[in-house]
Image (cartoon, rainbow over all chains, first blue to last red; front, side, top):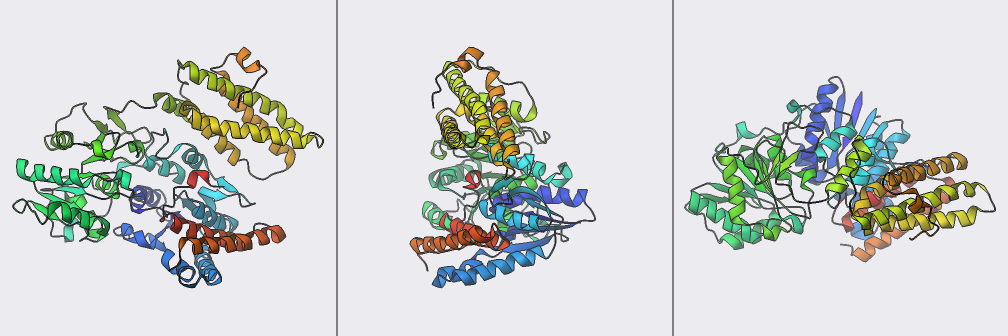
Length: 485
Length: 58
């Protein structure tokens, strides 16, 4: 068997994919495992099991002629060659953990050749499709503005069809060849993929100074070339008697990974360093904020802490130090968010969780895991659910009319208006977001088919939506004549 | 180095090519490759944040 895992997202996502690759290898010892990553992030594959075949997407080369002289034809020839060479491998399974439009078209290219595809793909008519329940969950519920509490690691494993075990949670081992003092320094990763997620330079400076001068600790800073100037400006060559080593912009990915792995503790925002630390079982202090869903991408090494603030600017040296000192002194309090790494497949964090969105999470659990639906005690939400129920009921009554050629046009117009109103309701009331996202995703999954079965399945979807709403809304409120968009 | 506007022009041309093929021959392998290239260009316009539009994929 030949299996391809497509991970065309960023550095951190590739490290999050390592356990899945390890599990695939373990569960399919005779299979040939391949992985596809972007060339720019290929260093994140260094240290993988040597039997895993690595393919790279060379965006720069493929798009070169577009950038240089607008030669789309030449670029298309290069893309075709790249795709055809991959197709020649005739993979039995393709697991797309990239969740992007581009990767969905690539997945479908494999599907045409007979590969079993997991993840984002396309319907035969080119429209977007989610191939499996795990991907449907991702599409509907995962993202920084979502209410999802499953870690991405677990969602990846679900999509890949593997059961993760602790033996899979290992990453690159560069320590033995490196002249790095083991476990006697704190590593601070200063970067992040987006500005809102970056630890403020002021905090990095003040925290580093505090750790070095007040507590005599050794600190190594790592980060990319983009962060180098700001960090150099902040520290002006200061080393605090040799306790600070500034390696921002001065290491390869491999070296940064080694430094993170070998540290006694890692401090970082939502970045690849957290995932490397997880794989190396290095405790982390993750400085998180409302722009990030820490449930999805937080650290998973036991004894790690998540310090959550509304904005990254709200983080303080004092509170960060409290989290650090808890880890270093093996103390355990409920002051911070902590990881329970044993709880594979369940929400990973407990402790001082931010007050947020319990209703929405409980709703997600009910929709996907069969737990009880949450109690509703907010009348404004009830009214919005009643609106949703009414719209669903009207839709249920309208769908059969699309089969009547005389009523079809009016029926489509009304159904489009209803769908637009339902979409708006999700933006208007976040309590309804999980339910409406589930509904929208199931509609996407219907795909091209004969008119009558499509109408029947569409009606069943609206009926399911109505059924859930009816758990909360009294019948007389659904039966009222007016429908408010 | 092409500007954003020029990249968008390339996108338009590719989209038009794909559209013409779909109209005459349906969603073929050739269309698929055009779409892959289109999406790669769009990713560059978004600074290679490949996942940002995943949930609005169509």
